Amino acid sequence: MSAIAERSDRRMGPPGSDNWHAMLDGAEAVLREEGHAALTSRRIAERIGVKQRLVYYYFATMDDLIIDLFHRMSVRELERLRTAAGSSLPLREIWDVCINTTDARLISQFMALAGRIEALGKEVIHFIEESRAIQVAALAEAMQRTPHGKAPGTGPGAGLDPAAVAIIATSVALTLTRERQLGTQSGHEAVLSMFERFLASIEPA
Image (cartoon, rainbow, N blue to C red):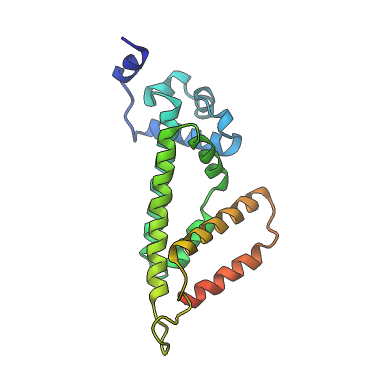
């Protein structure tokens, strides 16, 4: 029997258990603070105070752990976006999620790993497409509204492509978050003021 077959047949710990989450929490902390080069089963075990072999009781490989870690994070972020989209001020709430809860350090690490782990790359693509769809739907609805007293098609969002706006907003939020985490905020107030004016024009508070 091959090593792969033996690995797939052995008993595994239950996904979603307290230990499973604890290992993902430890992995997330290592990835954020030390980078993907330091993300090993030994380092995770040290981080949460368990024996190294216990990591492989819950995850067959480190790639599996990384994929589950990203999937858990993406489910959490998509839920935040869906909740924001269902609020009374969806665009402002979605922008708040993007600008205040995005972790640029983790995103950079996952993007680096996605180039090596094919299944992770698919998870990343799924997350990008799902999150963008939520943003585009909220933008499209808001931008189609016609302000009172104005002719249809003459609102502040007229002529703008919701998908393009979503990509620009997400990119800007990620850049501002990354720079803020590095310790610089030069020009940030100007950009935030610009986006506030845009939001105020299509979704008055």
